[in-house]
Image 1 (tube, helix red, strand yellow):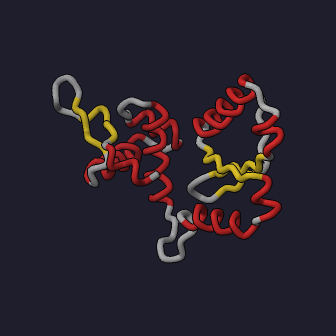
Image 2 (spheres, helix red, strand yellow):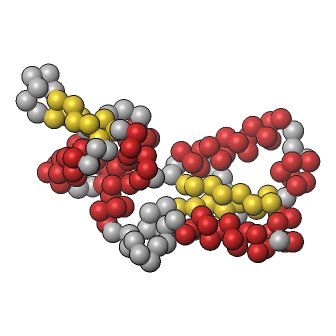
Image 3 (cartoon, rainbow, N blue to C red):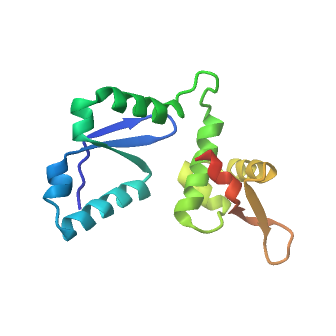
Length: 159
């Protein structure tokens, strides 16, 4: 199934989908099936890693200053002059996002494949995240080696 969006905007950390929804096609003329399809579409886009932001057509056309203010509030979280976005921050966020998508403890090989990095680097990053309390290391059967990392709720603050 194909989905089309009104606008897309990418930052180094996040990709946004902006939708402008008119009252007629998105509310008044909508039946139960169209309503379900619309919600499934937005959920699918969210599951694919997009942040979906919707505006009413009436606000865009009649109150653009409100839309501009809301956009600045949303995008301001990702474009901060005092806190430059570093590759480390992007990598950490992407690993947390991966853990959310997989909904299970991460293995170093999951991170290797997802970020296309070598094993040692994946282990080093996961170890760093666990030292900061964002993940809990889980040892294997004999308890000698860490084989998985379970995400702690504190990691969600990176998203």
